[in-house]
Length: 165
Image (cartoon, rainbow, N blue to C red):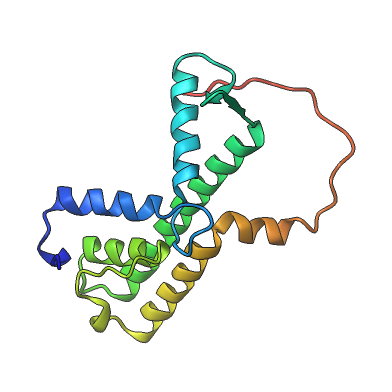
């Protein structure tokens, strides 16, 4: 058994990353999923090489898969940032790293802790329950469920390239 409270900051950062990526699709684990991370990584390399398509193992990945992967990553990072901010503001006496670790662990439904769970108040625990739910279901899935009620438009605007970075 590893005492996560005794880990160094670099080791904690690696554990946070692994928890954030989480499990593979179809499992009961949370996180952004290994395939989402894989698609995002492949997209980064394809973009760096100047390619318009993402190819892997003799297949081309669809633009929809790429867009969903980046939407899932951005939404999860925004949600995790908000959850760390909420729990940190509710539990001012605790350090940022233990609070972030607790939120990432809840988001990924890992079950690890730096030993602060028993010190959390009721409001912070409820916030972590919400984080666990969103981490398991996915912020993108929840957003799609809410916004799918909007009717699709039958027209298209002209395409435009914008300057990025």
